[in-house]
Structures are given as C-alpha cells and as structure tokens.
Amino acid sequence: MSNIENTKPANFIHQIIESDLEQGKNGGKVVTRFPPEPNGYLHIGHAKSICLNFGTAEKYQGVCNLRFDDTNPTKESQEYIDSIKADVSWLGFNWDGEVRYTSDYFDQLHAWAVHLIEQGKAYVCDLSPEQAREYRGDFNTPGRNSPYRDRSVEENLALFAQMKNGDFAEGACSLRAKIDMTSPNMNLRDPMIYRIMHVQHHQTGDKWCIYPIYDFAHGQSDAIEGVTHSICTLEFEDHRPLYEWFVENLPVPAQPKQYEFSRLEVNYTVTSKRKLKQLVDESFVSGWDDPRMPTISGMRRRGYTPAAVRNFCEMVGVTRSNGVVDMGMLEAAIRDDLDKNAPRAMCVTQPLKVTVTNYPEGEVEWFELPKHPKDETMGMRKVPFSRELLIEQDDFAEEKPRKWKRLAPGDAVRLRGAYVITCDEVVKDDAGEIVELKCSYDPITKGQNPEGYKPNGVVHWVSAEHSVPCEVRMYDRLFTEENPDGDKSRDFKDYINPESLVVLKDCRAEIGLQGSQAGDRFQFERTGYFAIDADSTDASLVINRTVGLRDSWAKLQKK
Image (tube, rainbow, N blue to C red; front, side, top):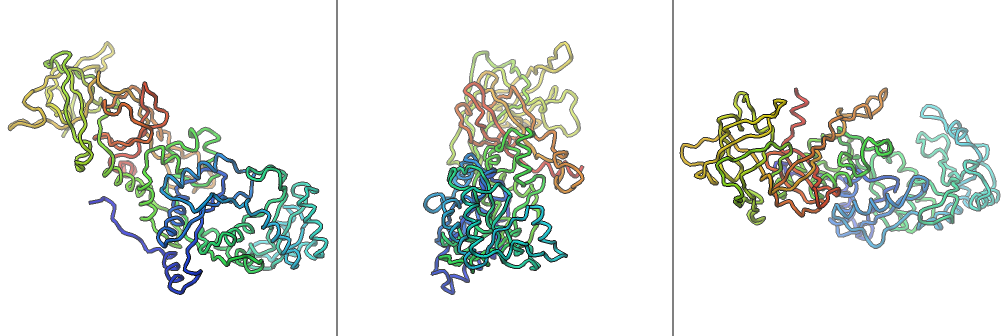
C-alpha cells in the first residue's frame, strides 16, 4: 500500500469544462495553453499549472499549446526558452504542434491596436510613468483623465505610427486604452497597451521598438489560437474584466474565457523569479538547477521523478483558496514513488575500515542481493565480500549508548546480506582516533542467523577494494524558516540553511553503481534516496541525496 492516501480532490475547472461539453459550448472542443514568460526557470508552482493545462487537455481529448509570452525582451533569453521546453517534456507532456510565441502575433496585435485607435478607444499619452501613476489614483481615490485623452483619432494614428517607427525615446509616450479612470478596478483605469523599448527581440530581431503589454497580448493570443479555457492563477482575477474588455472590443476570431485557480506555494522556499534569480546571481546556489532550488530543473537534478511531481500536484488539488502546502507533503510524494521504483544499493559515506582477520587474504566472495525487496522483476545484484571492508563510522561506538543496535567492542552485527561479524579489536592512530576495527566472521551465518545467534543489528557495508569512489552531496531544505519571505524587515537570504549542502568526500558505493548515468536513482539502504549527478566522471561518481527514508526534518523541528 502507498504511504500517500490516494485521493483526488475535486477540480472545479474540470467541473466547468464538463458542464460546457454537456451544453455543446465551443463546438465540443477543449483547447488550453501554458503561457510562461521566458524570463527565468520554471518552479514547483509552474509544475501545477503545467499539469493542470496539459492534463486537462489530455483528459478531455483536447489540445494544449505551449506559448511563450515574450513581450518583454529585456528580461528574456533563449536559455530560459530551452529550459522551459525541457521541463514540460520531462513532466511527460507534449504540446500541440510547434512551439508558439506571442511575438508570432505582433503584426496582428499591432493591427488591433490601430483598430482601437480608429474606434476612439485608445490614445497616445505623453505622461511620464511617474505622472501616469499620479493620475491613476489609488484604491481610495478615483483617477483623473490624462490631458492627452481627447486627442483626435488622426493625431493618435500619426503618433502611434511614429512610436512604431522609432521616432520617440523610451518612456516618452505610450498607447493606452480609453476605458474608465474612475473605475474601482485599477486595471480598467486606461491601462497601457504598448510601450517603447529600443531593444532587440530574441525572436523578431530589430523589427519592433514597441511591444504590447501582457494584458493586451494575452487574451488576443488566446483568441488567435482558439483557446476555449484560459486557465491562470488567482492574481489575475482582477485582470479578467480587462481581458474581457479587449475580447469584446476587438474583431477577434474566438471568445476565450478566463478561469483562475490558487497558485501552489510550498513552505521553506521562495518561488518569486526575482528572488530565485537573486540566489543564482549572488552565488548562494550553484545555478538555476541547483538541487536545493524549487525549480523543476533543480528538482530533476536532485532526483525527483516526473511521476512524483505530477502526483503531488494532483494531491494538492485545484481550488480557489490560497494556502501554503507543507514541504513534507512534497517529500512524502517523492519518497513514496522512489520506494516503489528505486533499486537498492549500499553506500558508505563516512568510511571506517574493517579487517575480517579470519577471512582468507585475496579471496573474494560474491553475494546475490535483491535489487528491490518487494519487486522480483528488478532481479538481483551481485555484491563482493572480501577481507577488508568499509562500514559507516556512525555504526560503531567504543562506548555504546543504551539500546545500541550496531557494532561495539565484543559485540556482533550482521553485514547486510552477508555474514555476522564480531568486533575483536579497536585500532587507533597517534591522535587517539579510531582508524580500523579488527573483526572475525562466522561462516555458518552466511545469509541467515542460526538458532541461538542474536546479532546486535544490521549494518550496510562495501568491499574496500571492490567498490566505487564517490562524492555524496547531502542536500537539505534551503531555508530554516517556513516562510523566509514573511518578515519584510529582514532579507529572505538571512534564513538560508547553512547545512543545506554538506559535501562528503571519499565515500564508497557498491561496485554495481559503476557505469551509472546521470539521473539514475537508488535507495541507499538505511540512508535515503539518491541520484547520480551530471558532475560525475569516470573516476568518481557524484551523488545527490534526494530525500531521506523518513521525515527527519519534522522531528528536528519538534526538539
């Protein structure tokens, strides 16, 4: 049985779609889209949106487009585009047709902006950004009309043409929709439609020096693509009247509808792209794909599985109620998936030498252990046993504490899948540090405990000679506080966990890991779940801890 309760919370968006289909709306079609801005790497919150948009299309035999909202070229790059495409594919989804870009529609969007001017519903405004904010008012004060609001259609067309031709400096003027400066919805107070930006675009080059605002481009792009259900997060709820205003006042080919759901927030992390970029730029992490980052690429590198992330998003559900999900829920989803699917192995992270004095020198014995204790289809693995072994330093205590279940002087333990050994002698260096244990093994304990044998526990081990050198990176939560961004009087970086990464050198893994590829995942017995990192070389593996065998963090927090 799974440790995760297999429940599926109600999905109100699916309920809306099913009602639409029953009524024959949209010709029985379901068309969704995932429209990220290519200004950073995607994070866990985006994973929920990806699963919702693509998963909804799959469920109702529809299609989902991948469309990059590339209306702000100053913050966008091809690197981000490539990473987003890789993330969507990794999660197991396929977009319909070719990748789309809002910039594909720049000509049409420009023509529609001209249409609004011709209809007397848009005007060129010369107010500076600061002046425009002043005229806009606030939630308690209605806005005031711009002194340029009543320009003639002819003058506005001429000025907009000059904007397009590059005759004005950035910030000199903008094109605004003429709606209602006294509206209680701030988004309807003559919002900007186009602004001047003298920058090259990664898709269109230097063709344009004016770029549409998201609120103008978004709904019209949906209409061009025939999107039936425009699904976005709750922060866009107040933008919906503007979305609808543009659709109603332009000769668009379709009438898409916007629906909002609560975004996914997880504690012990931040999901602001600006803050994530700050962590990268200021070298608090090694990059966007650092395994401590909540980015999809970081989670992939850490060893998370696509299935586990999708299951987590489904467990969270789709509602209109904002809330914060506990990181333990995500880790439990990862642990649950890896428990079923990760092959077992042994790795010693802090080696202590064990010499089995009564085992013949030069002899090697191969034991067969299951790759998975509950899945025979995974087969068996072979583990070499020799005179010189390695165990964890923490599995030995010279002065054993109460209820000690590992090795101590005079005590016996079972080596996982092999023999029972007894510690006969402790060898120390000149500084008094333990450097070796001399032990003896009992041949009759091979693979089992004969009657009367009661070893003091089971420990994992590897052959000193026949094992793989590796570096193990012990990753933990990036922040020590549940809400690192909650105290606005302090910098969120003040809460970075100093032990979020502990690098262990000179580790040794069982020989079967030789030749492992980046992304291969294992459960290291008695230790946790791990994944091979892309930094691995032929000489030494680099291995990332994905998640522990159990939620030890919760226990630490209770102390």
